[in-house]
Every structure is written in structure tokens, then in C-alpha cells.
Amino acid sequence: MNEENTIDLSQIFYILNKRKSIIITITLVAVIISGILSFFIISPVYEAQVTAIVGKRNDAANQNIQYNDVMMYQNLTKTYATIGTSKLVAGKAAEKLGNGMTADKLGKVISVTPETGTQILDISAQGGTPQEALSRVTALSETFVENSKDVYNAGEVKIMDKGELPKAPVKPKKALNIAIAFVLGLMVSVGLSFLLEYMDSTLKTAEDVKKHLDLPVLGTIPVHDEM
Image (cartoon, rainbow, N blue to C red):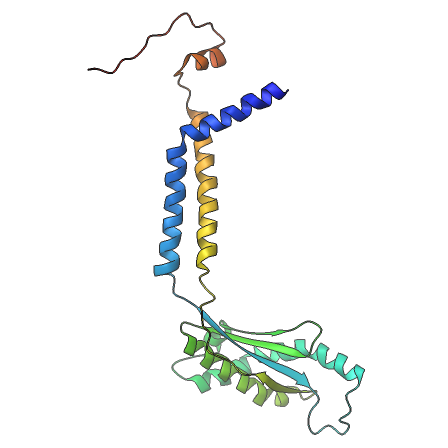
């Protein structure tokens, strides 16, 4: 059994070594293409973020915060997250931005996500430049705060941390893309190597004759390079 495993492993290494030029070429091409796409073709995407908190309204009769109130407002964050990405809020934020921005366009690049177990909402927006991302998230958060009380007045949304200019793009993830291209290129090239070996039915060595035809080799004719 060990001998069979040794033979199989040796055959695998033989095939890989035999087709190493194909493996290296395909893997290198995949990495180069991924690098070109990531660094020169795909436009960078920046993301700016604002954090807001959902709490009791200032005009509430009883300002004492109870445990049940905290739990209630934690549950309300999901409702307010939906309001934050609604067409009403997105439309008014788009009007504030101008420059041909529409509610549908803005809706594709914004998100309002509640932090689990808290009253906090993460409001984010993406753009082609740091300033564009910041202006979008600022317009959205301001519009959200202004209109949320009119839509649903169970609580009040307040801004905790204002947005800042993002320092680096969130897309494309260049290192990750290149790593994925390397792995895929390696897998494809290795698979292709074994496929080519499987389809190659020619007999090139005395060992091939013994293995495939089970015939004794009576002699071999050496090949000499012409002088």
C-alpha cells in the first residue's frame, strides 16, 4: 500500500515538474491581469461613516431612562435603519446634494446599519472621491435626523460622530484580489496540467511501454543531436 502511494506521489510530482512552464505562465498571467485591473482599471471607491444614536425625545414627560426604555430603543434601531434608507430620506438628501443625484442613485451607495445590542446606527455612504463620500453621508445623516421624527416619533435620532474624509479606498482590495488571482491561476494551471497529461496517449519512454502495454522492452534506440 505504501509503495502504491509512493508511486502515485512520484507521478504527481513528475507531472507538475513536466508542466511547470504552463503552471508558472498561467499563474503569472492571472496575477498580472489582476494587478492591472486593481491598480489601473477599476475605479477606487471611498466610504465615509457617521454614527447616530436612537434615544428618548427631549420633549418626553419623564426623562428618567429605565432599563425597559433602553431595550425598547435598541429594538427601534432596526425601524430607524429602514427609515434612514427610505426613498423619502434618500430623495431629500439627493435634493440637498444636487448635481443630478437622484434617490435611486443615492440609495445604491448608502447604508444604515444598527449595531447589535446598542442604540447606535452606523450610517455610511460611498463615492468616487473622499469628498464625494463625505458629502453624501453628511447630507444623508442630516436629512435622516431632520425627517425621522416626522415619520416615526417614538424616539429621537441624534448624531454622535460626524463624518470624516476617508484616507484610503475600501474598493478594490488590491492585495486580496492579487492573492485570489494567484490561487485561482495556480488551481487552473495545475488542473490543466493533469488534463493534458491524461489526454496525452503517446509513449515516450521505456517505462511508459511497461506501464501502459505491459510488454517487455527489448531495446532502445538512442537519439543523438546532429553535430
